[in-house]
Length: 313
Image 1 (cartoon, rainbow, N blue to C red):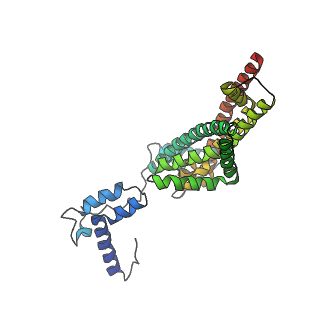
Image 2: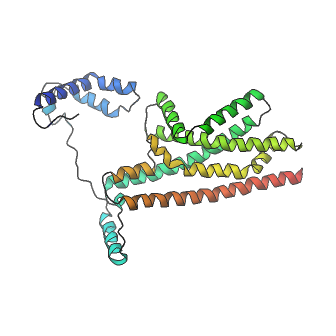
């Protein structure tokens, strides 16, 4: 809350007292809980304003009750000097203006590290979810049970018709209805949305392989038929796995604390946006190259199993 610098002393005093009472009586806590917002800070503030020395009309002037002013000066990292020296050396010797703000201040460095870790968690989670949903949708749409098959197709068509951003927003809204919103909840919602969107498409390819094998009147049945269908649809499944990995930065749209979100926050209080986002591009390029390599190994494994199964048959 803020008021004008001039002529608003009475309003500022009223807001001070209202906030103090709302903290003490738990009204802020009740509002936060009803909206599933984290309450750790509000619980701590309620304990403060219930103390006898704070629960007075002059409590807002007591330094023991009021939070200290925010320190606007950002603490440098232990290696900030070396980073600045490297930037200067590169500028003087190669005429390249490089800025690495995520390495110079402690808050930015912490956010950068957390962003990288969360992005890796998000990518691994999206790959696992995509593969799991692909198997689930493939089994359902490849089933001979008509109601199950048509239900899976209906869900698949719905997901295919929905923009990924809308799928993310709906997933976040559903998760928020059951859990207090946090970084972990945002990551979980993003993983579920990316897995559903890409897994349903991969599952459709898998089910089509199942039905094509049945049309060929193969003798394979049950699990054997399913594994052979995996080999036949391996290329499509791998394509959607790669697509899931490439799509993870969009999770920042619903507040998932991955690298794009972290770097956007860092550039809000520092310079060097061109370098920052170039670094983001390099990170995701390297990660996707690694995912493509691993998915290629998975494709070769699945196709090899299919060839061995056909040779035995």
